[in-house]
Length: 118
Image (tube, rainbow, N blue to C red; front, side, top):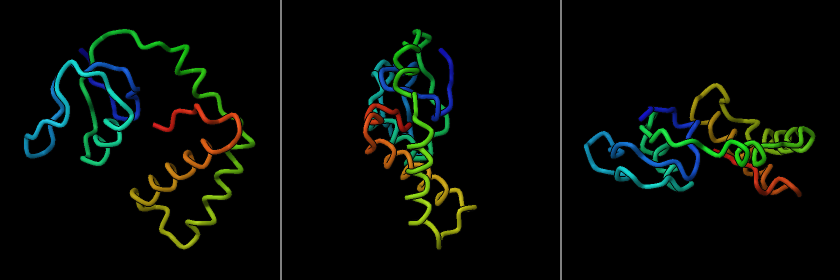
């Protein structure tokens, strides 16, 4: 078992412990494989670390899914930055919204459909 940060979670990883919120409610039970929606839910609940089993992660898949065309990323950043031009980008919530919006915009670009946004 190892604890990893939320940003390092990948779909398919198996939980080594139940994930509970601040009031003790179980969000996901031990042994379940992670789904993309689970990672979003953990972020919404403010979960910072998750205990996962020591099973090896298929790194070749995650590497292939994370190859990003730099020009398309810059294009997506420019499109999104215009939407956030009146926002306080130093606020952590706004910065995270801008980051996620940029990655979602990138996924809409041709050839970037498989980029992992988590």
